[in-house]
Image 1 (cartoon, rainbow, N blue to C red):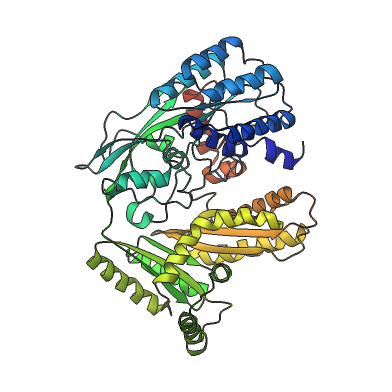
Image 2 (cartoon, helix red, strand yellow):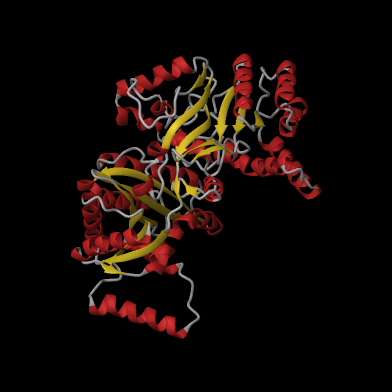
Length: 541
């Protein structure tokens, strides 16, 4: 089977983009005729293309137990296809509570099924693809209906939430009570709380609210051995290695996260965007380093290189007002002619401040004073807000590009401060070089931004895209380029991943990243918790 077909038909994500929508409508009791036609078309398409041997262990007893324990329409539909077409590999289950998960895991252990947990479907590490060598029935365990806030503790500022809730829904529901988590990943429109835990996620406002490991107080996870959880919900424990750190980053290899208790905060009183223009990327990185050193970073501070600045500027809507257009012209003249900034070299940092008004204004002044020392010029709130919001639409732009023979993606790393500049330069150059060697006819987009700052280093995001006209297998070429870029990252002192996770895409480098002994420790945990490999997605190991 070609690489393209593998990507098209062996990926659970592509199927789930349809089936999640269907499941939502089923639960809303509004399954209409036109959608039923869509379902039928999808089923026929799957039957035509998934020429797979019917799993031998999908027996009548299992079918009966699934129907009795779950009683969901999609299970019965999937079984119908299996029984009458003998070519459908995956069973879908939509769960509504922790107890449902326990039942499904028990059935999977009894009948030796393979479970792949599914949250929001935003993984970019091939973590949700069904392993090609898997011969057992695969149960794709969808947690999207486990989306309730179970309780809010206003005194301790914590909330217990079901793991299937999507980020934007979580923030919306908490806001109704005057609270927020502040965890705001690029994917928060679709990604789930359980997915954040499973991948050790990071949000754009981590400088105030922390990464997911800083937010988590308590986790409940169902494994083949039973339920894993601590006996109390406290801020810290000294009881040996923290079991939460076995769960966070486990990527669905050990069990299913069902409930999470997280820290919450009152919705901030005041929010203000900002932006700073620097004469070059080096000055911008030096400024971010100083801000981190003084520990005065705003909720979000991100530095984009010149290529990304030019890209964002090209997406800026045309201004209808003559006066506004005139002002924009004056600003450009001031920056380029009066201050001498080269538009082909300059870069921009976007800022977001949150808190009470007085402290935000003090904080803002402190950051802008530091920026001035590195040649930075304040560029206004509108540019800061536009740059911040652009993050949420990049995935849509990527998908739009496919209609114009453009394929692209993003990947990330973390790196010490003294290697940020070399890593950014070398990885971008490697992408350009690899594209040329692989026969890409046009110059690719190769760009980066510094998105998170820490005392000892930073998170760097890379974006690349190329026009694949004339290339017979663009997905294969893309994979080769991404692999080369990842090797360049490791060669320049970067990590395998900062927050996207490992999945199947990057697990070849796990031994190099955490040592042979470290990998053995992870295997030992897997063998004890899941001796029959029920959670067999083959991520990480």
